[in-house]
Length: 328
Figure 1 (cartoon, rainbow, N blue to C red):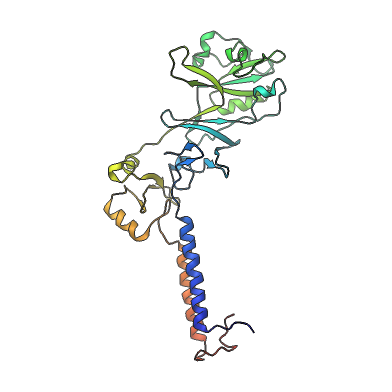
Figure 2: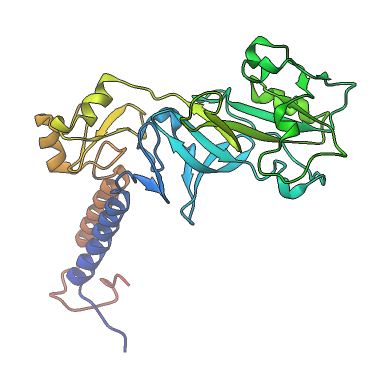
């Protein structure tokens, strides 16, 4: 024989289910901004949790399930192996680019691209090496040596006399059966156009090592992407340790500024009295404006209405279970 419950018992069970769903939703949203992905620190203006950092970089950085930081671009997702905030830039690697292990076996590649609507841009410290370009479509010729240091003062031809073509970083061999030229594009669109007429390419950036010139830079494979750090008075106040040391973020609905604090969010800083008192009451979560979601509130209201309706229709049975008042 099955278990029979009274009307009041079933009403309580239904209410508990609704409350549990609401509190589970609230807890699942109550997250803080992660400060690292693997061994890479995540600081403003970036964020890997929605509502953290600047909205200008929303959805751009991703922390994979394996703890690897990746950047999203129109051409794909790329592994980030370094982020510098003092000299704002990120370093990425493109697995489709040529490397020393390929030798003179050129595999299919695709051009790296950036979304021009973001505050990312290719660094002028990048230098691109193109292999086996068609000279019917690409101007390939040697350039004066000073062009390697000051490419902006030279024409846009692909330099066949490049130092890097003659000294491949990390390669123990010389490119004997292939042609090589160096080109410094001003935009990622130029990379796409160049690859239409070249077999493959790779990117080398000049990393500063702090040594006296001319030995202050060394070449390494990778793509350097420079970024801007939007600095606002509100963000500086939010981060000020004397005002609570919050984290700069934004409302995920309106993208307006939010100071993310331990006790809740504020539109100014963590020690703002009114905001702190409000956050103690509602415990606002990172990137949201209310602690209780509209869906959860609606669920509570609907549940209460439903219970009242059932109670109004239910016959008075003094606790006796019958087919007329059976809920399940």
